[in-house]
Structures are given as C-alpha cells and as structure tokens.
Image (cartoon, rainbow, N blue to C red):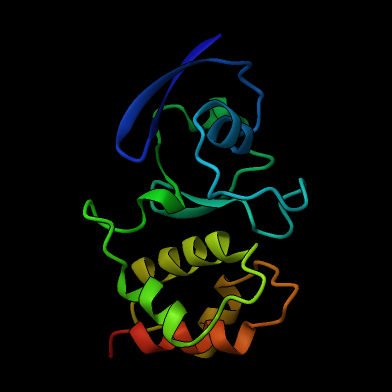
Length: 151
C-alpha cells in the first residue's frame, strides 16, 4: 500500500504495509538508523521520535497512524548546518552517555519536554523521562536538562 509520511520536513512516499511499525519504516525503509530498537513493546523508549512535537515511541506505532503528521527523528534534532543544540551540548558537557544505546530516544524525550516546559522541576523531568537507561545515568540526564532550562 502506498502511503506518504512527512519525515524531517520531507514528504516520503512508501510502498509498505500500513501496520508496519514506524520504527521499521524509519530504519529499514528510510535508512534513518539513529532511532533504535530496544524492547519492541514501547516500554524502554529507545525508539522515541517526535510526532507533531510530542515524544512518541515508534516500535508499536503503525506507520498508517503517522500519515499527515510531522515526524522528526534524531537526525533532524540539530540545525541545517549540523550544529549541536544546547541540549545536545549539555549531554556532552554532563557526560550523559555511557554505552550510548538509549541516547537518541533520551534526547528526543528531553527535547519534547523542554519544548512543552522550558523550566521543568526535577519532578517534571522524572515524570517526562520514562525512557530506560541501563547504564543508570539518570542524575546526569537530569543535570543536563536542568542546565539548559530557562529560568
């Protein structure tokens, strides 16, 4: 079935099954491998992207549910010149990544949080950041987010 998805500002026509998870469309059909597969049941958050600015886990989201939506992946988080965002720089400054596997999903979740709430409390961060980091860098994640918070 032919569907059109708007990914990173570009309309992409695809001939796929409508129930194919968006994660597999991004990775296998479009070659956007920054979005990771973790659990396959929307529990870990490694597959998080933005759909209309909201953090969404893509491993269980059918591609057909994303038709007409604005999908943004980690590849488009930085600007056109590939300059890091303040959040990405904070991730480096606070040495957030260890193994790094969860980081694209973490950054997408944190970015969506800051877009909605530019000055989150620690409780706000804890509520929004439900992604799993098996290395346990949660204190660094919180510090990185707080360092770019406005206020």
